[in-house]
Length: 303
Image (cartoon, rainbow, N blue to C red; front, side):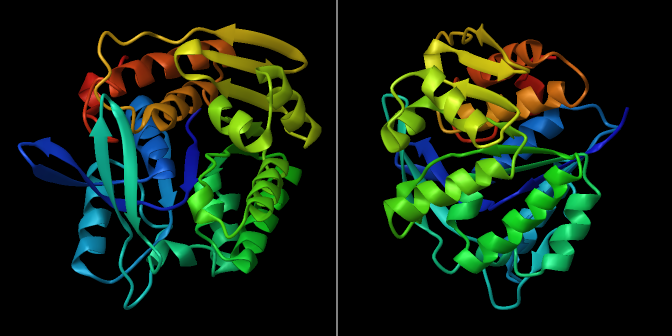
C-alpha cells in the first residue's frame, strides 16, 4: 500500500573534504539524511516529504531544488524572508568525523512557528520522523508546539519515530537536554537510539537499560543501534538481535545512523518484520560508511 513519510528537522549546507585541501559543498542534516535514504529505498508510490523552514536566499532555493531532484517533497517547507540555512564543516581523521557549525540564526529554528501548518502536515502523513536535533534547535515554546502535535498524532494511532541523537552543544544545560529528549520519546511510538549516546548522557550501563527506560516512557518499539556491535530490538515484549554488516573499509561514518534509520523505516512501513527491517538498515549503513559525505548515490544502495 502506498503512503507518506514526513521527516521533520533541519537541512544544512554541508562542507566535506574533497582532498588536496579542497572542500565539497552539499546539503545534509540528520533528519534530511534519513529522508534521503528512505526515499532511495522506498518504491515510487510512497511519498517522502521534508518539513523545515528555509530562507529566501539563493542557497535556500538551491537546497529546495536539490530536494526536489532527489524526489523528496518540499510542499511542507516554509520560507522565512531574510533568513538563510545553517552551515557545517566536516573534518575527518581515520574515518571519524568532527563538526564545526554555523547555525544560530538558521531559518530552520522557526520550523514549528505555525502550529496549524504542523498539524496539517502531520495529520496527512502515515509515519512521522524527528530527532533530538530537531528539538535541540528549537526554542522551548516551539518544542511545546511540536511535541503537542506529535502527542496528538500518537494518541490518534499514527506511527511516530524518534532518534534521540543527543548533541549537548545544542542545549543550554544538561537537565533541559535530557528532559526534552525524554519528552520527545514520550511522543513517539518507535525510538531508534544510539547506545553510545545513551550510556554517555543517560548513564545506561547496558543495552537492556536503554530499552527498559524507553519502554518506561511509553514507547512501543525500541531499536538500539550499537555500531559494529549491531542492533538490539524490542517489540511486543520480545527482544532480538541483528548483527552489523561489516564494511571492508570505513571512509566516513557521518551518516551511519541516519542511513540505518532510513533503510529500516523503508522496510518497516511496508510491513516487514522489525528484524528484517534492521538487517536491511545495517546493509545500507555498511555501504554508506565506505564513501565520503552524508549522502551517497542511491545507485550504490542494496535492493
